[in-house]
Length: 185
Image (cartoon, rainbow, N blue to C red; front, side, top):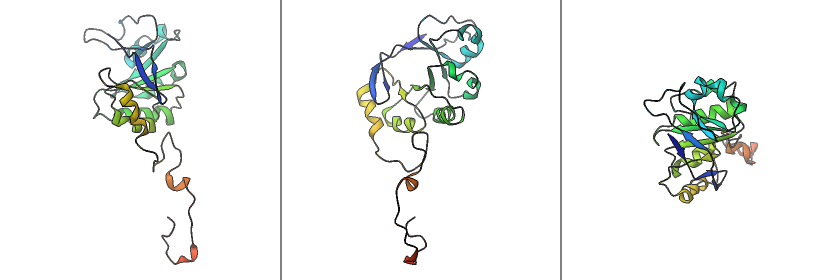
């Protein structure tokens, strides 16, 4: 089954989307499912099973399930214009670790898209770990969801989007002679 998203959030704006997401039906097998022509984001299992035939196509992306390891794509990451991470339900946070590992450990530089149960309240945190595109469910108001990227103006911790923690980004007035050892921390 092909899922389409007429619009997604990319960067910090709503844009038209011409990619489809292939979801396997229960009776379909990764090694025998037919991947249609056009810009298709296939499951990791389909990529691994049909790698030889799909590798020649420039219009293939891949999506990783919450229970899968991104290291399986390490040798192929430069082939993909888009890698998506599936969030089967909003309470499943494994996709955050997958995104962080794709960006920081595996060095993926292309579009990193969140698909599945993507909610407004998650966008800011998703951006922090490296996502730059979001495909919320079609029944959600995409313009209201976009506002989730601007709920905070400052972050304390370092992450993919901000290499330095807050205390390293701001100058401090440190007075050694104050007698207070903790002054300025």
